[in-house]
Every structure is written in C-alpha cells, then in structure tokens.
Length: 172
Image (cartoon, rainbow, N blue to C red; front, side, top):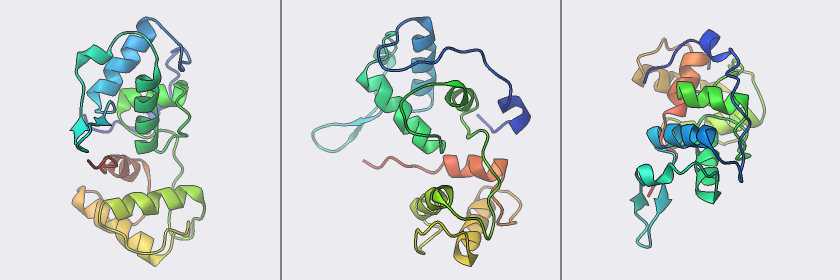
C-alpha cells in the first residue's frame, strides 16, 4: 500500500476504542489489519520469527493482540499503550503515521530521538541519539529520502514519516 495524503488521515473513523479485554467484530477488524501489516510476530525457542495466520482473528483482544498493537504503534511513531483509539485506527487503515509534526534541523526532543534511532536501524545514522536534529541527522534524513525516491530536503514531513515507518524494527 502506498502512502495517501494526510488530509484523508484527518477524518474521524467512528471506530470504538479497543483495549485488552474487548471482544467482537471491531476486534476482528483490528486483528485483520494487524495481520495484514505483519504486526503479529513472536520468537520461537530458536530465536526465529513466527508469523501466525488467520487463527489470530478470533474477536478477542488478548495479550497477543495487545503485543501486536504495541509493535504497530511503535513502528508508526504512536504512543505504545496497547489501546486502539482514533489515531491508531487511522494509522492502521493507512499503514502510515498520522498527525505528525514537521521536523527539521534545529528540532529537539523525544520524537527526534525516535527518528535518530530509526535512521540508525536503517543504516543511515551513526551519531549520538540525543534528540538534537543537527547536520548528521539532516544528512541521514536525506539519505533515507534519496533511497525512497523523495525530494532530498532533509525535512521530515508526511512522505518522509511514511518512509521512516517502513524501516524494519523487528529482527529475528
């Protein structure tokens, strides 16, 4: 799936808030989306990734579904609380981050740290993960943008957030 523009992500979906213990058709819909995006993953006793099939679509929001939600939320730069509210629903439907700020040289904070960590996983950044968007972070963003076929401006907007969210965060 390709990234759609942010305007389509801003519409309210009118989906229920789901959390551990929830049951029903909305949970099945959630589980189908999580399965589609590869968020149900665990390690077997040999350290290999195990990706389940449709057996995870049971309509019960248990610990396995919560773990998948948390994994998905982390990949899309959402708060990793295991609760599926509007922003997580919108990210699930788009397979993309939503409501993200523009970050550029001079930006600071926890979100910049997350970006630096993701850029390091992608092999584009080897500086300190310090939450300071400096020249090294800008150069790494440009490398990611080049690989993704995006304009290389070093600014993290919607399309670059999408590229960052596609970096593999599960290694097994």
